[in-house]
Image (tube, rainbow, N blue to C red; front, side):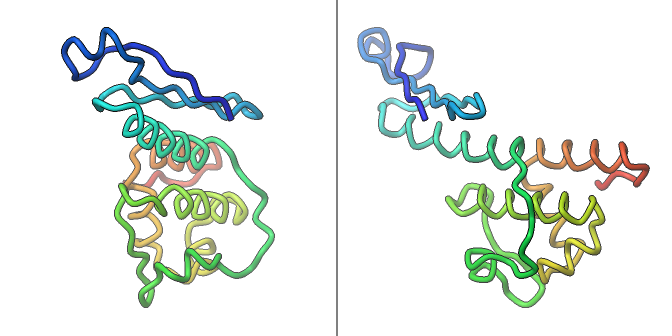
Length: 151
């Protein structure tokens, strides 16, 4: 992973012209990149950029789903057949990645993926829908396979 800093647009008045508060984080093995410039400090921008990078990785990189059981982090967030996580929580990218990996491993069969993850179909779609680019990706994959898109 590579982290670079730059002077860029954003809050800070004169400070933004003098201090490199903008952060660009690149996951070098895959070339996936995320940046943040909207905060006043480099540390805050780094935290935001890393979160965005994790979301990009969750969206763009598929891991082969081989386990039949949900992960520990997934089970910790499971309440009955509901998965409870806010889209701004640090666990969200990992949960989104797992959901997309299981959906892809189930050949984009939503009911089968939901059963494997021990959630309802609507809860699985709600999780994916809470990150709009993930819903776009899901619908694109479903349409490519002749399934109807989700809303």
